[in-house]
Image (cartoon, rainbow, N blue to C red; front, side, top):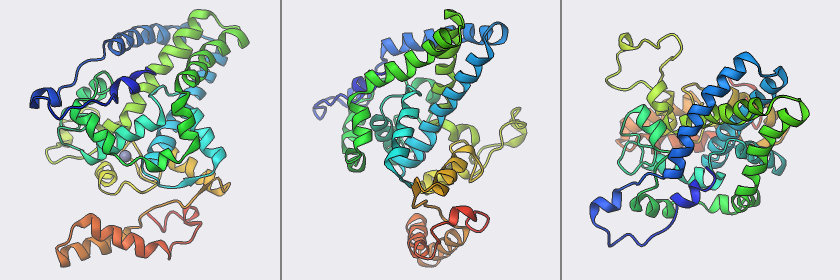
Length: 339
Ligand SMILES: [Zn+2]
């Protein structure tokens, strides 16, 4: 998993390649093998979880999985990819450690890919296949090298802000060591050595089952628009999953206006765990400058767009700038008013 980034972002002089080769993505076979193992061993983990795992192992693994997911959603997505708030060094360190336990690659590489995903959303060059179906995007995007075209586009993504973040660059440099200690050793050694659980339980539940869950939830950050978004041809009566999936327009909102800390990764707005965690850190003064967009600004922006014929996003952003100074610093405490 850890070498994925390096394999996928390799730069080549691709300008001379024929068109097909330029867009071609090859499978990363070690990752395909890892993926097959992960799925099989996680089934073993689920069996042990239900039959013989110790409660301490289950609770510890759940906590580690939750921290990994927070590292991806609050850390990689809302803080580093979209800059929806600023974070103090201790908070960035905490989120960096959490993100390392997710095993998705370094913060730098995931943010670079996510920014390209937004730039090329529903176009062929999107590394997360947003033009294809959910399973295609969810499974395949993690197992294929970037095409030469994508490698070139990735080099053009502005990453200056992350390059100036010592914590992100430290993690990028020592990712393999941090991954081994925080993701592999910590998750297996703790249940085995400190809780006295069996080696199979520690490995299959603590590492493989957790890796499967965090890997899939983490990938949803780029693919959840397939699951929770209402698209033009969506017919509610066709869906058997209506009881646990509430489709909304929030994913489209995120792709239109990503700089809003309340935008949830899984089709929600302002009500999820990620937004709550950011508000708690803001109350502690570890998170500052929380960026959000009020419905008044959206309405005014839309009105201006209709009246002037200018692009919608540009008009809304203009209103956001005007509103910025009027927004009290602690607006996150009164979210009714700023939704
Ligand atoms: Zn995003």
